[in-house]
Image (cartoon, rainbow, N blue to C red; front, side, top):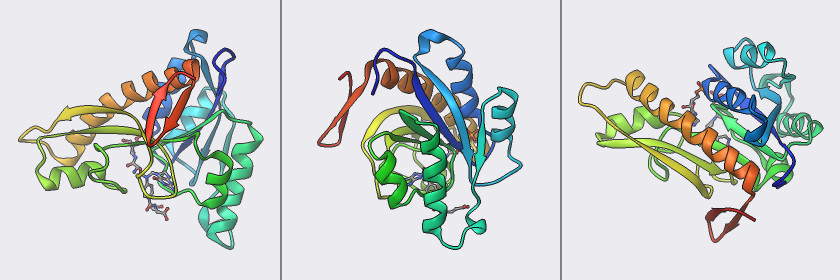
Length: 206
Ligand SMILES: Nc1nc2c(c(=O)[nH]1)N[C@@H](CN(C=O)c1ccc(C(=O)N[C@@H](CCC(=O)O)C(=O)O)cc1)CN2
Ligand SMILES: NCC(=O)N[C@@H]1O[C@H](COP(=O)([O-])[O-])[C@@H](O)[C@H]1O
């Protein structure tokens, strides 16, 4: 990881892209230390891609159904990401699991933000699963993606309360407020300070 030049980020999205927007807003300040150089998606017509286009950031889309196999889709995602020479790839609401080819190219520098306090409530419905379980606090986790599902080394976590009258939407919105702050703070630090991973412990600094 560079600690002096501006780090190059490729951000992957599948939906609204509010986490992407938080990164785009932060990177407007050169002192942040990182720039979004491309945005990738697994589907067309999403607000996340529109946010990138409005910001003048190049985009790419690879739909699984347009590829003969999941491995070919994974290779296409890998090639498109690699063409932008990212220092970090950030999955921000990207609803596809990365395969072996992608992890071979970007393992150790592929980050994902998840709407629960991992290792509790992994998968696609972190906020709903936490609410259904009846926990009193939940939150968001930024981690370095590995071959498992939401099992990688944890970079940062943010805690939010669960209120008695929460539904999934109100809880997820509260999580997303804390999540965006955590994502922006942590990605900036990773870019400016570098990081090491030893025995699952992620530490800032090189
Ligand atoms: N190899 C990994 N890839 C990714 C991880 C990960 O931990 N390991 N995290 C994700 C994001 N994620 C939750 O945080 C997540 C995304 C998607 C799925 C999933 O089962 N997706 C299905 C398709 C669902 C759909 O398209 O509607 C799939 O990939 O076939 C689970 C967890 C980023 N990638
Ligand atoms: N398992 C992946 C997952 O659930 N990701 C979640 O999707 C939301 C995307 O919001 P956004 O599109 O507004 O950034 C975020 O809360 C993110 O953690």
